[in-house]
Image 1: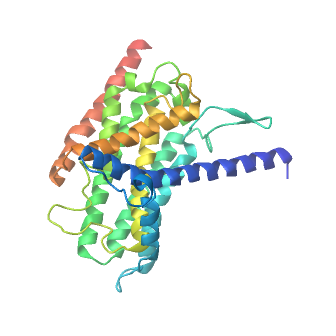
Image 2 (image 1 turned 30 degrees about the vertical axis):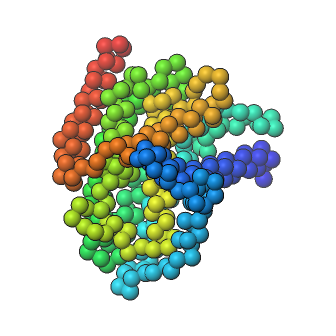
Image 3 (image 1 turned 90 degrees about the vertical axis):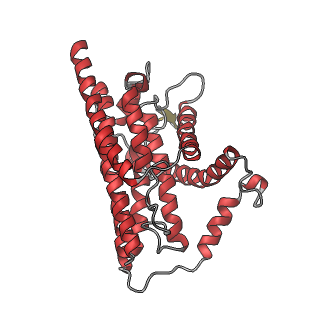
Length: 331
């Protein structure tokens, strides 16, 4: 085996382990942070008992769920019932394979890109992979053999498919300006001016669609107003139940990382190291998720679908039209 190939293979493995470890650490931190931030916004203390200021609460919750009885309904489709939680969390994690989180650095004489892999169709990869999470939700609802779970799964998948369309269209304007599908090129194109300045309408559409895509307030409708169950994951318990919540936070981190990459300049910023800038922007986006959840009430399902198809979709097409028109005038 070629020595240089072996070195780059080891570097790639290290990058995968680091990114996966950091994302897992962020998921655990988000569970605590969301409860604390929402509590302070509502004039409460939040978790305080386990560790200083409740810092060990996520670990306590994880241990509790790990040792709870893992129940599978007798008439459930067992294989799909087990696969469904995995299908929701894995796509969110592997999306980070093309997210650039820093510029090149030199390690032991080798130039190392701070991205697991830079492919020339990174934009298409992101949406091809992230859309697979819908299958996990449908599988969970159907495999449970529970009519309310099935309704919740169909309702959630219809919501995700509807807003996935506007989510993708909102980024077309950025791709048109960059003239590349590589996420590294998208970030490099923002060295002087962030795309949020050039694409404010696209950013608004993306943020709104992202909330619906990850089932966050005011679009948190896996559970319907008329039901007393949790939707597609009603029949799940123990670590399978925890995996669905891991998937929600992983998806939050994913859509926030995409927002930073496409609209907020990626790793670019003065004085601080590039990775620090990326993490600061990512943290600000995650805080915004919590802030909105603490502030806005949820919509009805008919309002949700009408807003997506009758307002956001035409608006996203209008944004593409205006972007193309401006590029023709400048060209």
